[in-house]
Image (cartoon, rainbow, N blue to C red; front, side, top):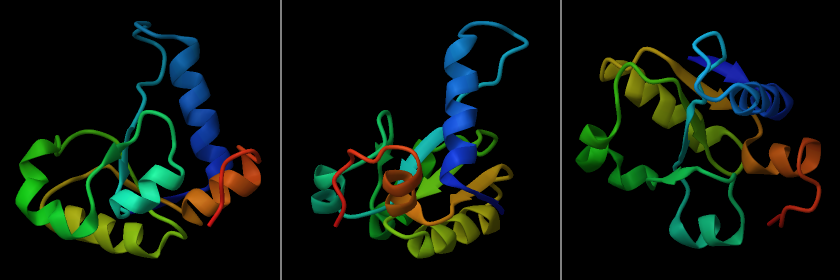
Length: 115
């Protein structure tokens, strides 16, 4: 599993938005938020999919094993655990957002609610 900083993720998302439909452009990753619904309601990255950590084993078939998946939580601990789980299940392009939404709020989107 690769570690991805908030600024690296922001650059990846910006690159994928700048060339939609362009075969040479980067594809956006799936932003997989594994926090609880109440946490997601407080703040989240736009376009992310909420799939709470404890529901993942029952819902894993909703994810594409070959997709680029960035796993997100509050500080990066739960997401690292989920990323390891996904890799053990055969997913091969998993990224952990180091520092989670807290790092995103600090480094990319200062107006984002923090908790």
